[in-house]
Length: 105
Ligand SMILES: [Zn+2]
Image (tube, rainbow, N blue to C red; front, top):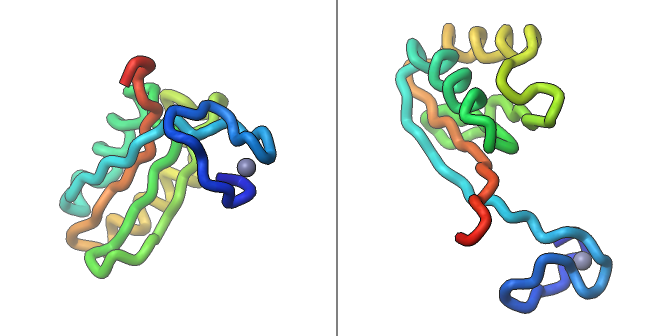
C-alpha cells in the first residue's frame, strides 16, 4: 500500500491515505529467448495486463514495461528494441505479468 498501512480484508481503498487497493494478480511464464518478443506481444494484446517484467535465469529483472492505457494492445518501438536485445543475449527468460483481476474474484 502507498502508506504501508495494513488493509482490512476486502478494502477497496486505504483507510489511512485513500489510495485505491490494487486489484491485480501476478503470473509467471518461462519462455525461450526465441519466443520472448512474441509471447510478450500476445500477453499485452490480452488487454488486462498492467505490467510486464522480464527476468533472466538468475531471477534478475532485466526490463519492466508498465502497460498504460496508451500502450494497451501494442508495444512501443523502444520496448520492442529492449526485448529484442534481451532475446539476443539470453537463452531462457521468465515473463512476469501483473494482471487486473476480473471483478468478482
Ligand atoms: Zn495507505
